[in-house]
Image 1 (cartoon, helix red, strand yellow):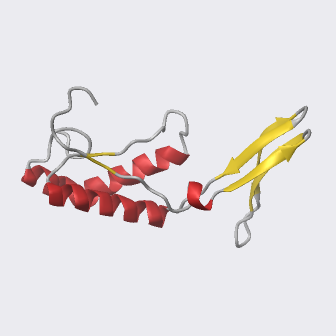
Image 2 (cartoon, rainbow, N blue to C red):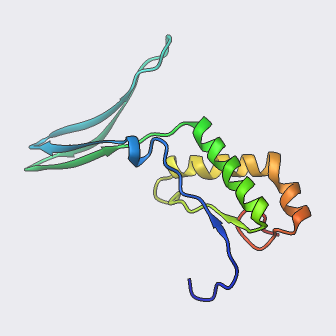
Length: 132
């Protein structure tokens, strides 16, 4: 990136996301739905993703777990802390408000609960997590 002169830490997460995603070719018209069936007494939740018309198209379903995202946040912050580099989380939470927003929220929770004081004491305050 033009103008950057110091190293930073950026993580790449790959648990459920694309490596365990389900993708499909949709042949012809029809409705693509996503359904969550919870264990226990709660009712299932169903979302209509898209109503295909014409020749069809493609579809992709990804997932992740809070546990995996928290572990990723801890590992990322630990690496940045050991290197004394600022940590940046790259998301598209303006587009994927819930999916990438969950990463952003969990990263912030982990930072505030376990890392803010360490980053500040180490002088890692140039942007990203550890920003002054």
